[in-house]
Amino acid sequence: MAGDPKFEASQEVPDVSYSSYAELLGLKGIFVDSPERVGSAWDEALAADRPVVIEAYTDPHVPPLPPHITLEQAKAFASSMFGGEPELGRVVRGTVRDVLGGMLPRRS
Image (cartoon, rainbow, N blue to C red; front, side, top):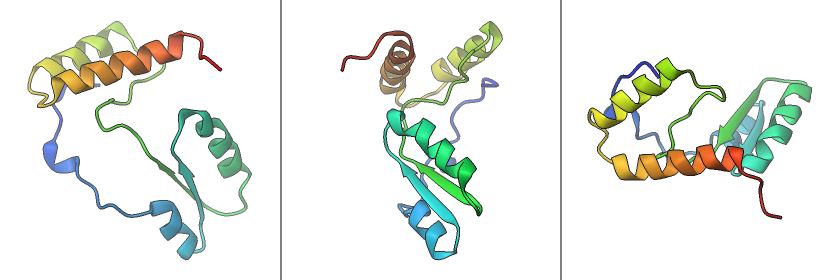
């Protein structure tokens, strides 16, 4: 949110089940693959009797935005996007979808 462009070398992480690995170490591992599961995952983690690893499967083209973004943060975000994001179109589409999804009612 500071306006820095994406650091490409930090974008590739090993394809490992971090939640399963946590279980092997004696920790609690929780895998989250849908927005609807986030709240219950946090409830489960906070009620656990041991340290917890929450592994969240996310869209790499949707940057994490704070729920109440300030104008300054929005300007910095836009500056970083238009200043060198290699997949700008996908990021913009994903961000718009994410923002509108939080504002519009969901269909059941």
